[in-house]
Length: 276
View 1 (cartoon, one colour):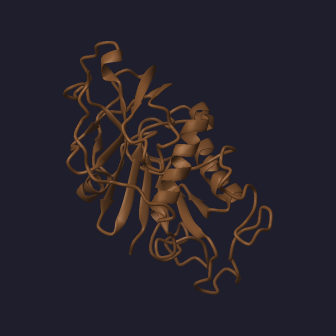
View 2: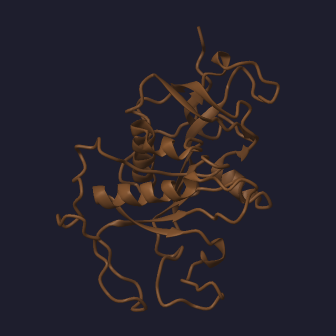
């Protein structure tokens, strides 16, 4: 299976995306067939088995039952992801908030077979929005490229440095972006295994003993491959209002398209750029 993952570390450590108004290259508000607002290629009734689809399928997954923090941004985030796919015609979205029913076959909450709905066998990408997730599953950390290690400055304004103006998800972002958010720091992360796209300008932040990085390095978004799949991670959007930020929305939208294989981007690891 070649499911791709885009993960936003908005609430912990996870992966992927969207778009709002700014995309002239996308047929705004039109389905793949050119009909406004239509769902592409869904033929057949529930339970009829596999159906041909004209568009890619994204599973937007956010289990709201785990973790200490139950962030209010989760509902809006999932709605944004669905909206971006629907209005652009780039993909169809299925939303799920119960991890127990996510399997290769559609399942009811009782564990019995369901007559229809998403399954891991039919989705092309997963947008996973999680709290510090799957701590007992080592492979998840390997897939993602890191683990959650706190947010030293809480919710604060900061300067984000764009290291990858050539990458689809970050080419629209200026060289520096001023934004307020919870800037999550990763642990068990290596620049030798992923391409860092965005990082926090740590020297501009107030000194904080909870910052565990070196050389002022704190990656906020990166891209990598895992097996035959593509993985994008970003830690933005702890606050619901951040999901309405034009740059953030476009970043996630372009990240999803990249994860789906609709665009290409260089994921070759690069060292921390020298600072003047």
